[in-house]
Image 1 (cartoon, one colour):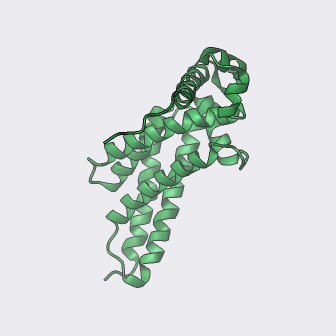
Image 2: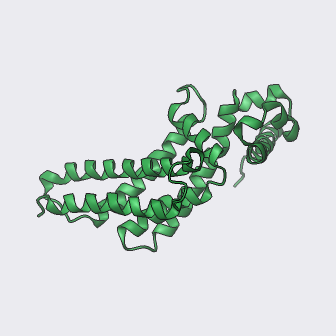
Image 3: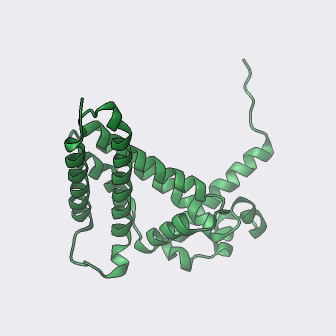
Length: 216
């Protein structure tokens, strides 16, 4: 059986995109979002500026392209770590804690949140990033529902909605802790420990309300 091999043009396009991603990642790591320029990224990737903008129309899109990949990788790592945890608080802490661990640059974390949550709806890679947020929240909600008592069928929808709200609360805590180094607020606290404490508080509240709900 024959397989269709990519043509030269497709291979060239794939290779250019690989170089652009790698160059953008290195420069954002070295200089941060504000310090890196699209011209420098194009030069390091050995492509023209016009070619660069065919793949990403703005520096913000380039940034999202790079950090969406890192966000997805962190979620995958957290999901694997959570599999070995039976306690729901420890499982969710492992899941979202991997995102905190993978964040190496507070300024870039803040920019990613800004571009992801408040960027233009027309940005090419924004929808991909928001899909990763939804994936993380879905994984958190699934762990909460697995730990909750089986509800009365009439209360199942309400319990699922409550798990979704708790998952969004967990994500909000994660966002705040990612940018905490830039704010100077609670500078003495350990971000990882604070994440575990707040996640545990959210989950304890969810499970307490779930236990109080009618069950079958």
